[in-house]
Length: 615
Image (cartoon, one colour):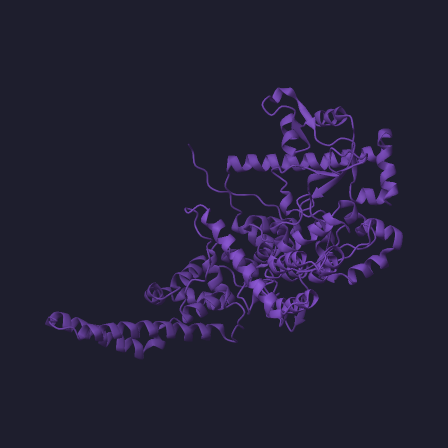
């Protein structure tokens, strides 16, 4: 079988993307930046801090956090902030900058997968437009239009969200798809259809959605990857909402409905509002409340929490005021608090959802509800006051047990202490007794986690922890000069012969050799950043640590003095090794003569070190 190389994006393309990208514009679209002289500062998005230590340098197109050590280019930031693979981060910035990407190694399997993915995205986008035209014009879609009108949607809002309608008669859609040239296999892979008989492909296709409103679900790039379909006629044998199944494009456990439109508003508002239904999300967006999203069917998952943390550390849950909504809020809290996302809960009036509430009472009234959202444990305790008989020892004990299991999930100890005091006071128990209960809950959780780990594959390698490669201080500074100053780089390239031996025996020497061999252009930030991206992560981290330093006024002089230090250190180490060798017994006269001659040579080199360099 023929082997193919993994496709890669050419370094020239990466450099072109970075040339067309302003790191300040990119990072400020995720987090607020404040100018500080010639640089910009912010609270680091990669670790908790109160004093800004995150620095963005527009001249070098580089960011660095003095607190946690994260640093890199615009591509690195997008990759880390959005938890994306490197290639996806590059492609995202390529789309933003308008730079086309052509991979320089052909992998037929990867190309086939990419063609299949592109074809499915095209199918979803064209299907959404087809469904939208039906809801606007088809006589049979009058029920759908009436429903939208009742919910307060006009033609403009339906068009903005590309809301559509799937007919009751499946042949209408299947005939359209056939005319468009889509195969049965593609329709099945899209999730819009399924096989009538999984064991007999010739049995034909079954259209998954019938007589439903169709809400397109988008990925981060704005492409449609799935649908969420709402009932128009109540059917107890079918869910109110049906989502596309998981496909090559769609993993519902990590997709929020509306996030493609809500990302920037969430960052600006510094919190996200999580609702239960797609119509709630659309209705609030249309009323100008745009930091609103909803999970899709599964409830909020760990993947959702990690994605949400990219944009905010504050979530306001706005679920229905019924038992199901209460349970959903508790489940969401468990996964959100694990990512240290602060959770508050809106107490909706009975029988109301966000959409109906806004229609009845207006936008300002809903905003007030959000502003008055209660801390999660206050929400739990208020609910318990109405549903639990605290005079019953059993019910009170069960409530205390549940609250202790939830409280032990809070990682911030100051916040946990406040929660303990609050719960203990409401339950009429002491802080110490409730703290003991939390300790028991934490012990139980550790036991369960340990038991789970015992069932994992023992052959699975542990997660890799990347640390910077060790570098000698003088070598690290020479690397910094070479990557920051064209004059210093040219001067160091002329010293390759003198540097050869010291670099061969000094930690990190191979990195300077690589820089001098590759000669990235220090005058172009994109050249430096694209060079760094060709290195292993541990080497990138080692080089990036020095980038926040100020370039000296005379880079060549700094390079010469540092090179002198490096060579001097190497000569002194050789001299020490010779002295040790001279102490060995039973040296022959020839060995003794050779060692003394080498020691004398080294002494001469140390005396005349400054004259050894090309001027």
